[in-house]
Length: 177
Image (cartoon, rainbow, N blue to C red):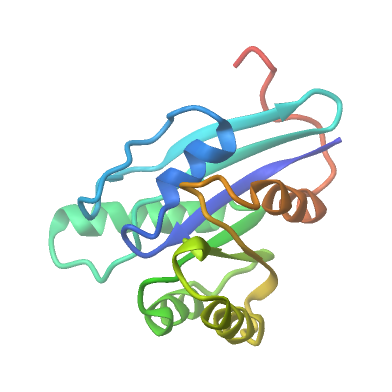
């Protein structure tokens, strides 16, 4: 059996909450075009008895804190870094890749990272290939998956990538939790 903590990191409005909701199959996190809607960590579970238990954690968008509230929100991100078995590094393909890359490099991850290129349905095939090449060359990228969280495209491929990296172990929570 595989079990572990998979924490989702990325810039504001990259689609972290949309991805969490799509993976779990129900609305666990608020989805809004408003930046910084997620202000604390949200945990959700994906169980397949006897096979796996994935504990996902949706974190606030990573920003340079300017206010006390931002500092508190970034403390949740720091905590999520410390208890992750796998990091999902979510990139909004319609946003600045360089900014995402700088953030991901600054995280100094100690766990394997899956770079998740989100909103792949909104860009050209050539642009997608360019993004895939860019992120595959990054030292933090263990594996890469292109998806559309909103359209729920390639989520099975993402789950497969997660399960390959998830450690063996007993479930952390009972199925009733």
